[in-house]
Image (tube, rainbow, N blue to C red; front, side):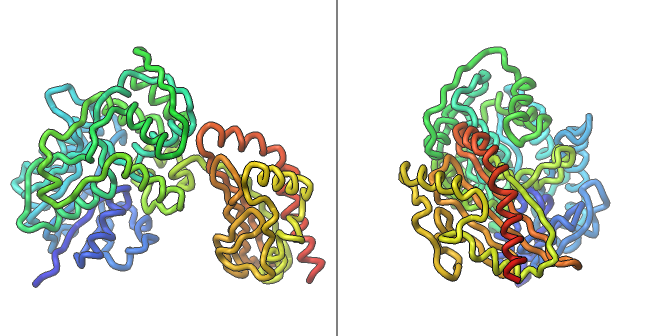
Length: 479
């Protein structure tokens, strides 16, 4: 029996990057169409798929050759003044190529919304793309979804940043609009089932999670899941999507042009009218609370496999988003030095840090911080350290998260903090000796977390430069 061949567009994007590994696990032969193949070659599944360079604007006959089913996850949102017309042209080109090549099925993840209600430009274009894909006679499964909740998704990160950062929010009227958010896990499961189910279940299928909520209710549920105090929302009638998008662009990592399109879509009620899709594909959707809890667990473990900024859209090329932000703000203090010593010698000295040896610089400040931590119920500095470091061991009020001699030592803070913190040293060899980077990272939790970072920032100037310099000086003396 022939292994089904599936062409995936948007494999470097948020949804596509999660669909591909599941298809590979199911034994499918996967071909990924990518404008920039280099973006896919770092993926853990890259050597298990065929990567084909190309664009949905191009001649797709070679990309479609031998393909049984195709997944369409392409967006041109904001790419140009005529981006909506361009999305339709691309979809028509794709559909025509699929028909010519004898492709049996196209699966497309579109957007919910009743077309009689005056949809936003974004949702209107999503539905026009679905009609364009179905116009050539190839069987099309159009899954229409609303807000997608998952670590790294634009909707989740926008929600996360707003609720984490602002205990009081002046909000526009759209926070009362009803929607039916769906977990990224459920969305991916539905896409994979739509691609692989036999016989094919075609047509427009509405998909959503277990709960229908307003955006204000989503904020309240997120705050509860994240252990934050209840947020105070003050709705006002004069906050337009344009004004809201500028505020979101300031507070969150979602760029203003994309925020504007997303917010305009939030004005429309997006609720599943026909719930048959999940039962047809044997998917039991998660509740919103379960979806948020799952997203938070993955985020806090720094394990988001894809992020909305992975998509090759103009918004991200212009804004140069740092992927380290995903799942929350990341503040850092980064220091770099060069030394004539070898990485082995430097790492040997670094491995003596903590315990009775101390932290090289600002010993009094470290002691005060340890005492404060003890007073508020944290471990303080009293745990000390083992003679020989091991991954998972306690090191004063840190825990060793990564230990790779002679290149990396990464510590995760276990002190009481309004957020998550790490301290990392990375050593790389150079022609003259070694380059060492010391970086303190902090992911704040809520508004208090941000206040904490700015409060301790002046103390960093007393501690971190001297820590690195004195550690290298001790290594030189030891050598």
